Amino acid sequence: MSLSRVVLSSGRTVELAQLRMSSTYGGMLEGYPCKRINDMKLKGVRAEAEQAFSLAPVHLVAPLREYPERTAGAFGPVEVLPSVVCTGVFRSAAVAPELDAVLHRSALIVIWFQPVPDVPSGEHADPALRDMPWEELARDYEL
Image (cartoon, rainbow, N blue to C red; front, side, top):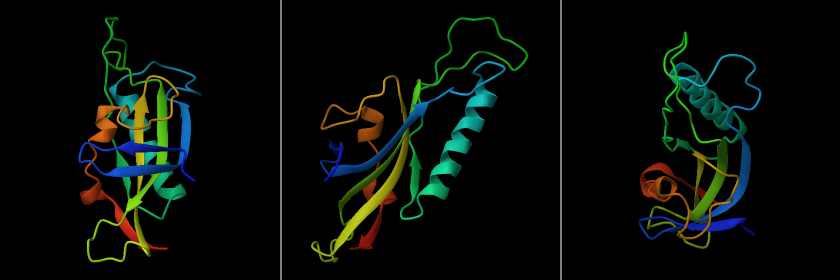
């Protein structure tokens, strides 16, 4: 049973089998969000997902970076990512048409950022999430 289904822009339906959510800046003790901090955050969440989920490739959806009008500090201008980082295990029908549809599926681990802790669903999921090129990124596997 899946947590939800997302309809990609390509028309493919993918099932969300597992979802991890956390605060983007949870645990940040010093400093402020800036490009350097955010780049380290993106690298860290990707490495964490690659270590935790070896069953499929990892895809990071480029997050929206906002630049609120604040005075720049020692690390440059303030740069803010959406407040919730999500890592999801998605599954769908096999990508390769020659594979047996009963015995094969495809999978992809996706990392994306969103402003609120909602589970993406249907055609109402974030457009950046819905635009992922599944056929290029996902890996087929045998059940």
